[in-house]
Amino acid sequence: MQVLRFKILLFTLLLGCGTLLPQACSGHVQANQTSCLSSMHTKSGPCKTTLLRLSPSSSSDALENLEGEDSFVILPPGFQNRRSEKYPVLVALPYTGGSGADFIRSYLYNTWPYNDKGSFEWGKAFQYFINTHFQEDKNRFIILVPPGIGSTRDHDWSGFMACIERYEKRVTDNLVWLKKNYNADISRVVLSGYSLGGDLSWALALKYPERYYGAILMGTRIGYRNKKSYDTLKKTGFRFYIGMGEFELEHRKKGNSLGRKILDQYKIPYIYKTIPAGGHTTLKHSEFIDALYYTFRFK
Image 1 (cartoon, rainbow, N blue to C red):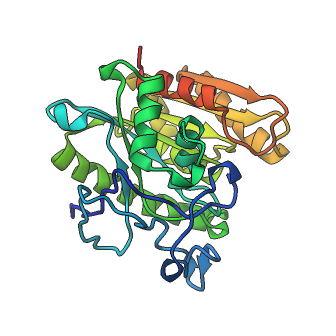
Image 2 (cartoon, rainbow, N blue to C red; image 1 turned 90 degrees about the horizontal axis):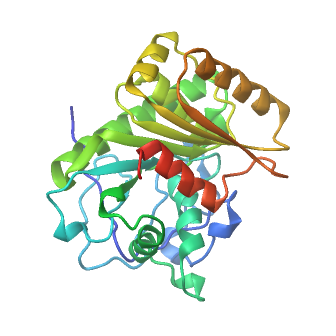
């Protein structure tokens, strides 16, 4: 398997704003780097480059990426002093019109302590996030954000199947690289995402139940099916944490309900949260923390 080389952006990165999570928007993209972010799509489909190095740290590793796209990795605080330890991995997947970085940034941003939100720094924000909510050293993890922005082209069945294949490769290649270079525990990988990202997380879990440890799904109809995976998910103790807005669109609510019936039928563990007064929305910050504890089996 070809190992994908990618940039690790650790401490001083800023990200262009997404379109669906306005609370995550801050910072300014340099003029010579806005060609793709300005429209989120190109004539050939979704933007290929969604993460920009606006203020790179001298200590970050800048490695050539064979696909011309950057994966985004954030290491937990104290990693350099505990490199021999194995760290589980949270994978953040994209939603329609936004990247996995937009998705995960909204939760780190919520913990960011500074009044000047424009000074947001990924590494420091993750440090505050971890130190606030995961004080035990054993409860620390790596965040992996594969490249790409979700597109409406991914919504029909053929487009979605192609999307699954793209992210299957990206996630697999990135995890192999992380295991080799940063001692990632790839037996404990939790997938996460909102809307399209939730559908991707569900589909990857069902397609490869032996590869993943848990999944956090938000605002998704979880329509993918694979009967061969259900017994494996039950046997491995795979855990789903599912959130859906009280006033979500009916087709998503119906699909989600059917998916949960399968989990009930095969006794696959999950937690379901209704988000009061919510429409097509994400979990609240406290619920996302609960989801991380549940899916990673933190104590």
